[in-house]
Length: 565
Image (cartoon, rainbow, N blue to C red):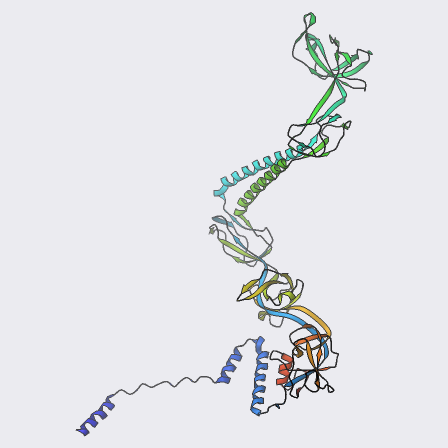
C-alpha cells in the first residue's frame, strides 16, 4: 500500500504542467547611472553647474574616504585678503515676454464679411480698415441716430447763443446815461441794467395833409426848419404813417417821421417844421431822441464785470458788462454732453460695420475672411504691437525697496542662446499680492532691442539694483553679526574674545552681491581676515572644499576659542 501511494504521488507530479518560464527581473540602473541619466537631461545652460556639482561631490567623497580629520582643537577658518574690486548687486529670476500692446478685435454686430483685405503677419497702421460688414439691415437705425445728432447739435448751438448773451451788449449806438447795477450784484432775467441814449440822431414826427403824405415815401430828402432860429437842417424820411388823424378845422393828416443828425444843440424841447419836396407839414413838433434804449439781463446770474461807465459813448453791439450764470453754464454743459453722446452713438454704429485697427502692430491671428458670416461677439483677429517687448516680474517684499524705475536689466533666453539683451525698469507697482504669507509686487521691464525674441518666450532677468567699482571688498560671509570681522593679527592676545592670533574689528559696510560685501570703514587694503564660510558662499565654501581654489585664501585651524557674537 505504501508503495502504491508513493507511485501515485510520483505520477501526479509527472501529470502537472511545467511552470511558465519567468522573465528575468529588470535590472534597475545603479545610483551613478541614474545621476548620469539625469545629468544628460539637464539643459545646456545647466551643464557647467552640473560639472561643478559633480566635482564637488568627488572632492568631498575623496576627503571623507581619505580618513583625514582636522584637529579638534579649534574651528577651521578660511582666510582672505582685503582687496579692491567691483561689486554689482542684483535681483534675478525668470518671466514671460509680452508684446508692448495687444488688442483682440471683436465684432459687435452680426452679418456677412464684405472685405478683409489683410493677412496674418501683415503690419497695419492705427485706424487701418480691417473688416467691413454688411450694414443693410441697420440703415434705418443709423438714420435715426443721425437725426438725434442733428437735434443735439441744434440744442447745443442755442445754448451757446444763450451763453453768448451773458455778454450784455448795446442794442443801439449812443451814450450810457445810467448804470443800474454794480459788480457783484445778483440779477434776475429781464432786470434793467442800463440806459443808452442816442444823442447823435434826432427824429421829428410832423403831420402832412393826407393826400400829400400819400405821395411821400421813405428815403426822400427833407428840409427841417427850426422854429427858434429858422435854421435849416437836412433830414431823411424814415417812416410814413398810414393812419389818418383829424386835426382842428377838420384837417385829415398823416404823420411823417424825419431823421436829422444832431449838430449838438438839438434837444427834446426844440421845435421845428419840415418840407418834403413841394409839400410842407401843417404843424410843427418837438424833436425826440432817435433811440433811448433800456438794456436788460438775458438770464439770472451775478454781474462779474462792467466795461463802461455813465457818460461812455458806445457803439451798436458793444459789450457793456458780463453776467455769470450757473444755470446757463449747466445748460451748455448738458447740451454738449448730449451732443457728444449722439456723435459717439453714430460713430459707434458706423464703426461696428467698418472695423479698424485700434493700434499700430502686426496681425498675429485672423479668424474670418471675406464671405464669412460673423456673429456679435466673434473674435475677428488679434493685433500685437511688437515695437518693443515687456516682461512683468514679481519681486519679493524684502527686495522691492531696492528696485526703482530706470534701473538697467539684463535679459537672456534659452531660445536666443548666447545673446543678452538690455532692458529697463519702467514701472514699479505699489499694489502687492499676498500668497502663502509672502507678498510680491509687479515690476514691468521694457526691452527695446528684441531681435531673436518673441512674445510668449520664457526669459531670465537680472536687475542691477546697485553697483560700486574699485571699492574695498571681502567675502560676505566674513562679516559677523553686529558688523564685526575677524582679522588675522599675530600680536593679538585674544582679550576681546577672539582666538589667539586674531582680533575682532568693527566695520562699516556698503552694498553686497551675496558673495562679496563692500567695506567703507574699518579695514584697509591688504588686511587679512578669517571666517568660516557658509554653504551658500560660492567663493569661500567651494574654495575650502577644493583646497582654497577660487577663494584666494587658505584654510587654517585656529586654537579653540568661541567665535563670539
